[in-house]
Length: 142
Ligand code: HEC
Picture 1 (cartoon, protein in one colour):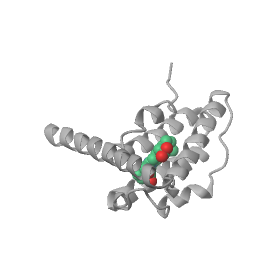
Picture 2 (cartoon, rainbow, N blue to C red):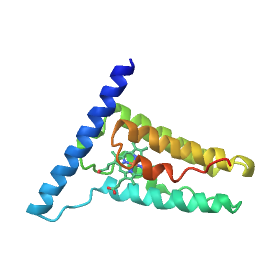
Picture 3 (spheres, protein in one colour):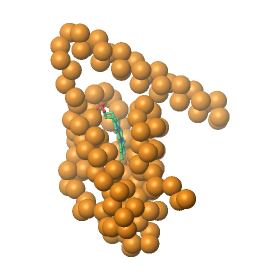
Picture 4 (cartoon, protein in one colour):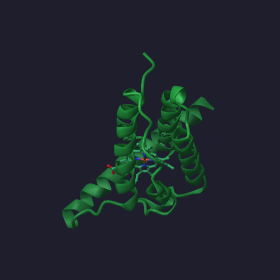
């Protein structure tokens, strides 16, 4: 079981760096177009960074952006990433985000961290590259 996990992690590392090489290759041929999903992810990152600073100031995060629902339809750099598991993680992420929006003030930190952990959960199965960056969105309890 543990070996299988290590194998999966290695596999995703290989496929991630493989993608990078492919992108670099494409860059030589034509200007690389950022995928819709990559653009959406960067927006999600910005909003969650903003939420983190709002919560640290004791404020309620901004409203749920309908734009995030595009996670179900945005085109991916690698379209084969969109499978049943990806859809499951998308739902899980949207659920935790919606919980944060309706959260009471004293559970804002817990619910924010739940949201960020749902980003990380999906990234563990798709692309592990941005995980260290995403972890910076977590609010530590001390
Ligand atoms: C359902 C799976 C899933 C969830 C949930 C998810 N991601 Fe992603 N993320 C991906 C995939 C797949 C890519 C690669 C997108 C592409 O290249 O088309 C990506 C790319 C990224 C990137 C790199 C964008 C770039 O190209 O520079 C960042 C940063 C990122 N995600 C942050 C986040 C954050 C923050 C969250 C939570 C708020 C999140 N992700 C939730 C799957 C997910």
